[in-house]
Length: 352
Image 1 (cartoon, one colour):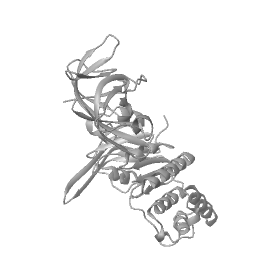
Image 2 (cartoon, one colour; image 1 turned 180 degrees about the horizontal axis):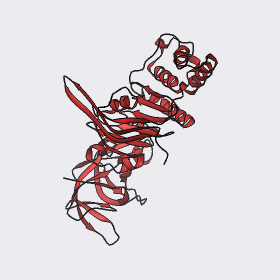
Image 3 (cartoon, rainbow, N blue to C red; image 1 turned 180 degrees about the vertical axis):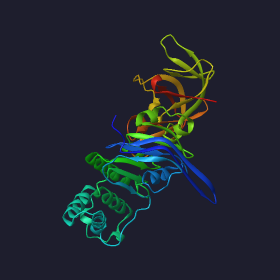
């Protein structure tokens, strides 16, 4: 495997104030060229502290940051920094400060403004830009420096849904075109998933899981990680038995059970995790094994997806349908719906 462009090894960062002490502990974490690492966690988990340490802005108490990148390590802060003057000046002054010639600075300025769709704003006073335009300016300025590593702290904050969607797509395109190694901190799981190749999850300053996007989404190591990565259907059960076809059964109560492809020994208490997109409303298309009926409590739609909240065996479960089509147009609270799952899409976390 290619060596990381930037790597944290046995990193410990300590901070203290009147509210107490905080310690960030990351044993190993690498950023790779052309790849996006999304850093997730609750408020106060240490996400921004990690970015600042990777950028060299926080002195570690132990461990080190190993830099192999042949190019700048650039950080875009949560609160955008804008220089006085025009949009064009904001890029040019950063490039000239980096020692580039005027011709090269001019070329990169035009290129980066075009990349982020704000070339038409080149002569605008940067102080008059909207929130979304300011975010684009800070990203354009960062990419104009042609960094080897880019660290983004909440790049979508304060943007509306349309602005987030548009900026996410332009940012992803820029990353693919340049091959920069990226770490992005965001509290918005949907935005993280649009960008991420890998996911790292912090809990109270500790790196508890890091891996390929699908592995972390579908196989979280504990309940907190499951909730952070959107595995909202969490059901208490117990491993019951294995059937002749190799499927293990998880008992919820006398009349409810769930199939899984692999399980620990019979009698083991577990949390059963099912992502909303893996819980299906059974309409006879063979999308899994039926697990009984749930009663619809709520249905909300954002115009793209309809989110259903159902009561099943005393647990609140969620699933999704395409908004405005099929069942989503006819359902009403109180309706009884048969649910189904694929055994291989059921995840177990042992209860202790």
